[in-house]
Image 1 (cartoon, rainbow, N blue to C red):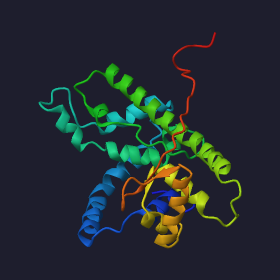
Image 2: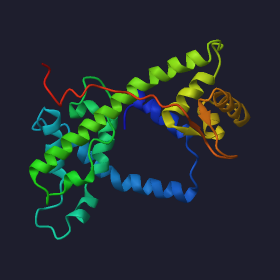
Image 3: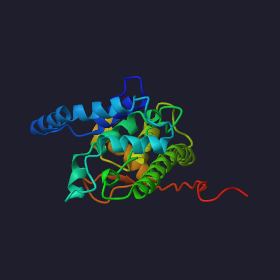
Length: 240
């Protein structure tokens, strides 16, 4: 969805290199899903350009949800009605184009800003507004945590491996593992690129420094490092 110069496009390319190539039947099924879903995504993207949408992020999001809500207050089964909503398309648009939701002044991926229950009309407007605010706050908090953790992960690596050569692939290997949580040698080899044996050696170096762990043969390596991030709960109370 973003153009090739967009940082998110580069991230998508990285994930594609990591991913295992699907079987022909899986690729055909995925292509069919993309083809049938394109209209829904286009409709959401077009709605985001409507000048009638409110400017405030929460009000803007609620207006977008109301525009695509198919459930009504008298539905016999409001839960089933939410299955047809473009919840996924709204989240995809927010991940690729957060500024269209007025969430940030610069392009900032904000995944998971809506959940299907927000499209249910059997719940009061006040309940939906409260839920939307909480989900949006959590999504923004998670994004802020991701931004804060990566520099700290790089600082941790610099302390653990202070004498790395400039052409070493250990740092990008660590950052990929930390960001994704788990990697197989084959996945890391495709991402670098490198040989599978070379990637496995890099992961074992991280394991030797207690930054990664492989619980069993042929299992993926996972990061053992957690970097808690705390932000002040500014919305809970006004400063004194």
